[in-house]
Length: 82
Image (cartoon, rainbow, N blue to C red; front, side):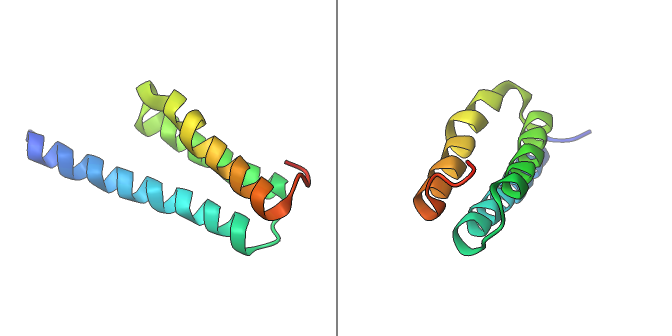
């Protein structure tokens, strides 16, 4: 049986992994010339993972991460294809 401490450790691992993937997308936006279509595919995969891991908090993904990625794209690439 999983203890509360085990649950916290597991959830912390999920959050760290999720944040690393979000940071990778931000890095790709800022430091590469990858087209928005490819970035958007990665965002969709991260959103699907958010839905799987945190189904009750999917609206937070849209409010925080989706907006962050679009803002970064606009800042670094202008309005090109976003």
